[in-house]
Image (cartoon, rainbow, N blue to C red):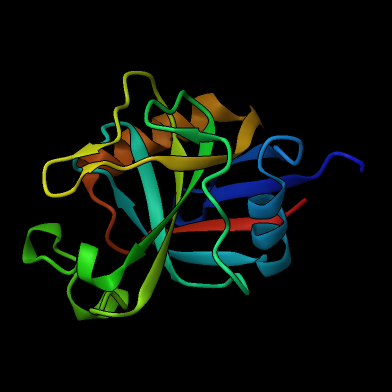
Length: 166
């Protein structure tokens, strides 16, 4: 199989990076994401995992991928896939509210980009939260990281995170 690449962008900030799908390490997840592209939604900056931006999406795979190529310590440039029930993210402490589509009993997919070091996927409510590493940024991480820091400091309101085929 030929290498596959996607564009990850923050459209309002006019920044993007290119990531290679890790078909050799997470083939089921890569296929599910690839078949669902393009994907986009409101962007959030992590509260617990540190240097992470992500979007929450309705489930899009015919069946949820198994925990392939898992990590609890993502590195800069990792793209991770998480699957949650709405109940897991429904606490008011997370602050999603009704507009995000997070509802009890409804599966929620979290597609994330980690842009800096020292991340730890440990949540005080549920413990370890392993993610599936399905992609790695190969170009443009530095300007994306700058935009992610701006997102952290200036706010995410009105910004989206977009994944498209290259």
